[in-house]
Structure formats: structure tokens, C-alpha cells
Length: 145
Image 1: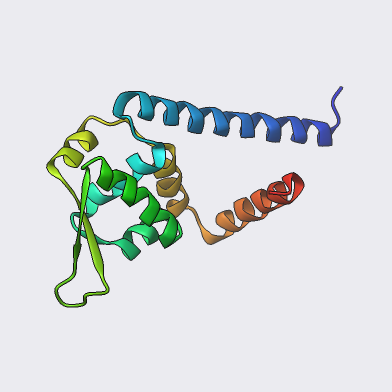
Image 2: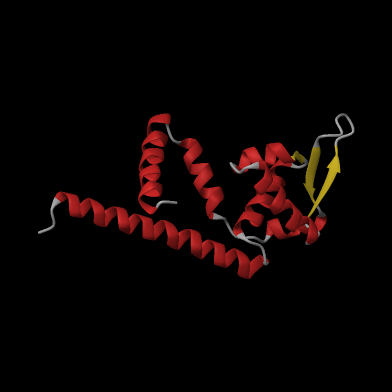
């Protein structure tokens, strides 16, 4: 029989495999159906809910570093899906919005794993978030990532 410890390890490995399968599966589906990466698709979904949004606010809503967000926006702008405008009140502020074409893609695009994860995590208590954070932190250490 399996010891309690080996049972726990098996469950952890199984749950991780499931997480990777969902993320990978949704990512592939998104790329097949829209030609966008899951990060790009998530960005346009967040923008569609927000209307015009500051780049810094978009980064915050996506829980990404602003520089990473700018990279995603560069690729979306090249595809003609988003447009950027400088704020008239403050020239340092850049707002982004979906173009007509960008809105069209949002309407027919599949759910993305990051969006599901963020929405689910935002509903959890601080105590539960702390447990997940600690557990994942240990996994990162194990993998030396």
C-alpha cells in the first residue's frame, strides 16, 4: 500500500499535470481559433471589459510587469487589434483600446486559462492564497526556476 506521503506526492503530480494540460490545451485552442497567443488573447479580453485603459492599469489587471504588457501590446498593435493614444491631460500616460477588428476577435474567442485562474484566485481568502503561494513557491525552488 502507498504510504500517506507517497499518496500526497502522487496527488500533487497528478494535479500539476492537470493544470498543465488545461493551460496547454486552452493555449493551443486559442492559437488555432484566433492566431493569438493566450497572453495576447487574455489582454484583448481584459481590454474589452475595460474599454479604453491605461497601459499601467492593464498590466495591473493582468498581474504582469508593465514591460511584458508593452511587448504583448506591440504585437497586438502590429496585427491591427489595438490602438494606443497619449492622454491629453498627461502626455506620459498611454491609453490602449481595441480596434473594430480586435472587438470582433474577442466575441468569437475561447476562454483563456489565465483569465479563469485570476478570476478564481481573486475570490479566495487571504489564508487560501497564502497556502497556494507557499506551495507553488516551494515547487519553483525544487525546479530551480
